[in-house]
Image 1 (cartoon, rainbow, N blue to C red):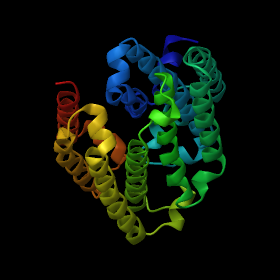
Image 2: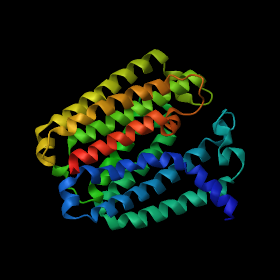
Image 3: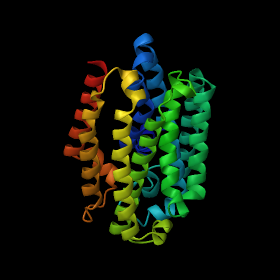
Image 4: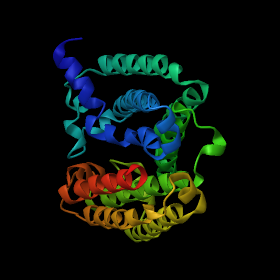
Length: 296
């Protein structure tokens, strides 16, 4: 591969979206007792994150290969490397397979449970690309399940037993991922409004997606609040002050809804989100407060 081809391959693997895989590493942040006793577990969490970056990157390559003809008709996706011809389909497939091979070789060092979650994530995305993304609501549920598998993979990467995993945290992960996915579909329907470019959009309505967005967003805030107030959480961290991080979650939810409703913006709301200064600042402050409350 030439340097130009490698750069095009990396672009196809969506570097701006790699931030989603921080969900794998997030488990180390909330596993205070484990990382305090074994600080090197943070390195395992980082390795797990890198594995999921490679797998998710390979999935993006697969999606772009399958959707290349439709992408060429899209106002934004037509500029993607495969759709624009910056990289050939054959080179993209070869690069994606290499990324998968590296990911699973590296992931084997984190144990069988981690590899099982990584494999489940890959299989889920294969079915998503071929079946789930064509069925309304099943598509967004599949996306949310992918984030759930990231969290579980992170738990297993640092050696947590199933009984040590917070199911409130799993619920929060699923809900926030579902919220992001519903918001993305709502934005696509408002901006694109064409089933020709994404078949599933014809099965949705703005009204139903708005309702789902508000319900899931509210449920996310409630679930996170219950997590911070649960006796298990307070006992594990030795403090009740995690509840002070709830307002930042609420601000993040509201800000994302504002971004979703920008009908004049053709970028995906998840792309807008990671470039939006108020959202990013709020996220960083939330993270800082969480670290202070747990470790301060």
